[in-house]
Image 1 (cartoon, rainbow, N blue to C red):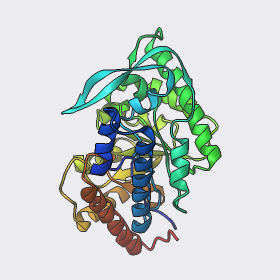
Image 2: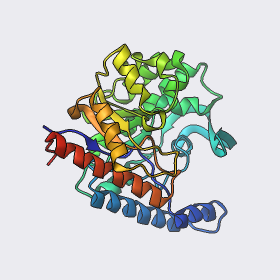
Image 3: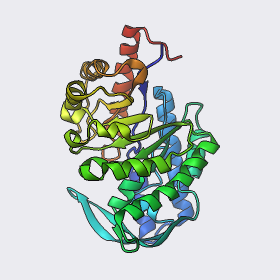
Image 4: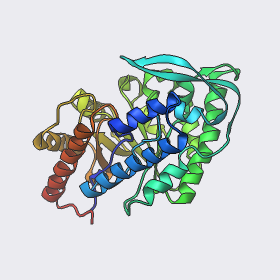
Length: 326
């Protein structure tokens, strides 16, 4: 039997040289071509690292992205970008604004997915921000209702998902971190996701961040994807208790076992304990193991160490359970 696949949620930290280059580009001190060359260099750096580590499902690392909403809005017809808005803590982003009918002018991520996939024989996950989160993290100055805005966004993002699958993506993740923040909007988010993944045969997933899961579980199991990716380590795996006490978790689960908000590197036994907690709720053939969220806020060394302990811990648990992922 196969199971306990290792992966990464999405982002990885930009090395200092790339972070500086992005600042230089924004201030007109670096050309676009020079910036892209560095983004490709560090994309290759992270894909090579994941390869050597033995991660089962690789990510492109998002070296070419800034904020996860603004990145998609920047090249989408009907969207403009506002000034800086605080997202959380001391982190800010330039909030998009819907000013006209939405249209996908060109692919957002396909070229980067193809580049990353050319560097490895392992599957590279296609990754986009979902329609509910895109709309929730934007101003709406055009559509009559938020529902119209969300569903229009879903149509645009569906085109991207179709192109990723046509190019060969076996896994496509549609991130919806905002879904758990407004429980009353969950039915809308479910409808929008159905539009995005309509007709898609690749394994689809979504990542949902912290929020009021008490209010959306088990309704969130109606989100029409194969895998739901959730942060577990930061909350001491308390969501597993919710699943056990209220209703079985019937989908595949991608479970965070290291805390992306902490500089502390978890030890192997701690990670193994988390994996075994997950196995009490979801069988190995429906369980993926990853960090709680993207690792972009950690240093390069911290991100590498957290991924390394995941792979080491999973390897031992697989051996103890007699799993064969060859």
